Length: 377
Image (cartoon, rainbow, N blue to C red; front, top):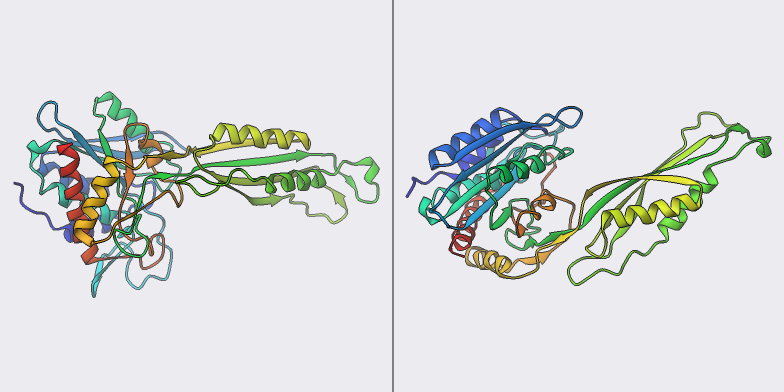
């Protein structure tokens, strides 16, 4: 058995590495320094180019006996910018009372620390364990986990199950796990007309009324009523712009943007086509960018395994949920069944982000239980 590592010490070491997205260098050095002594082969690779790259990623694997099961932990070491007004330095981890403060304490260096500390307690011959860690989850994510998945295929290292350490808990550690996520598509809308003097409208073509009519039709859409596991899909208008500095000129162009969060009754392409048809009817055009498709890991052996571990350590039965935004699980679900479970999310992305010290210890024990159960099959 490998000597126990302190989850608190690991968390503090990771937080002390400034790693605003896209993360690179020092924070990966720190993580590699924790994993290599545990018998992991660490692969680090920089992928992509400007404007969305380059991005550094890490894949580490410790092989078990031939034919053993493969369990993966996944997450990210990049963080959002800390902003101003912290009570202490955002990258100077500080223990105050029963809390550890620092950017990434919750999202999600604390969870990664718990993963490492958990694995340190698991014998190497129990099975194959890997870490799928990106430096670009908080950013465009174009060269992050997607690049890691390509590398895993090259290495023929596809896991049987994957646990993502996103902060899934709401009020107390263990009250919620994510068994799926809604998809996301953003659409940029444009309507062109002909500029002219407002006093002579017959000599111009104002695109604004057509854009307004288009948005009214889109806003009135009822996409669905939800499913057993997903809330209803929603379409929101997120921007309207003409940018006309003159009061007496009919504009030549009007633009808008919408965002759709959708459940597994839809696909991104299908929704993009539907919006494009509506835009065309009003003389406009639509350009869609799909951030991720909806997915669901149906309740079953994996979710039961996680729930049992949570109950054993916290006494809570986690609610199986699909709420919230997107995560890199939207990519990892193409490899194997994936569930998200991690710390309480109340302070993520906020100043004075903090994690309860007791939650770090409990999460370590939960992760150890889940990994051991997953490797047993």
